[in-house]
Image 1 (cartoon, rainbow, N blue to C red):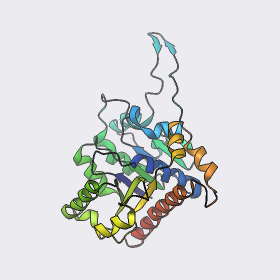
Image 2: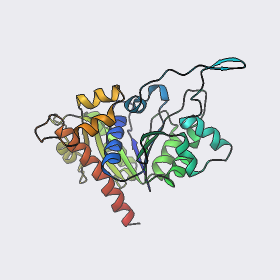
Image 3: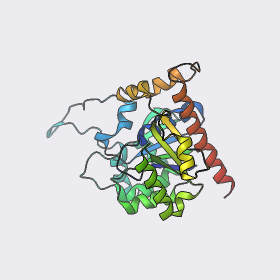
Image 4: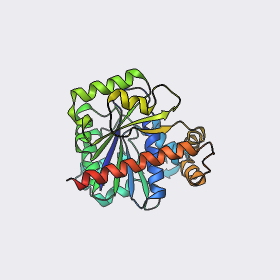
Length: 276
């Protein structure tokens, strides 16, 4: 049972959430893990939701005080926080608030419904509880989470995947972060690049050389069909359809890199656990 936190140290778009979606879906299909994705993004802006489920209009329920549209108020982190505040939370309860992608394989705990509910202080507790029930807890850690809570989540994670872009500024910022904080030089950290362009001068080989990085840098290449699937709630269908493709297929490199990233994460977790 392990916690893997994906995080990027900058506000710029790095493809972090899309990488989580790709890696989690691949692992759920190809490995016998029970996985939970925990989103810390406000639900209305969450690409995880649109990648797996079509948006549905709320049903009208006629109550004694008129129409009630709030039929889904208890789902996701918002509903779970209400339980946690009353000290009734347990590992098994978390799954009641998660949405299923693949039964017994992949579930998602969506982010909060709006700004009116303060949930951030309970993320560490919820992540810890989930880790007792799921084989793998994958945290999509956003900048909207307060710094002290982010640092606590990162410190308690078994593995941290730091996402960067293929920009020199982003690469230099990570180099500075490693100098300031020894944690980011440790074996608990993997570097990854989303929306990867292998034809860029800043490819993973050159970045490894520039940073003096001996560990593999993970990449998730930009893929048009994957992007379109994420807009249409068809990511599971996309992976099931292209999981066995010819090496000359346009999706081959994308799938190869998703597999490499996923296997590196699992291998690193196993290696760290063996040394505990």
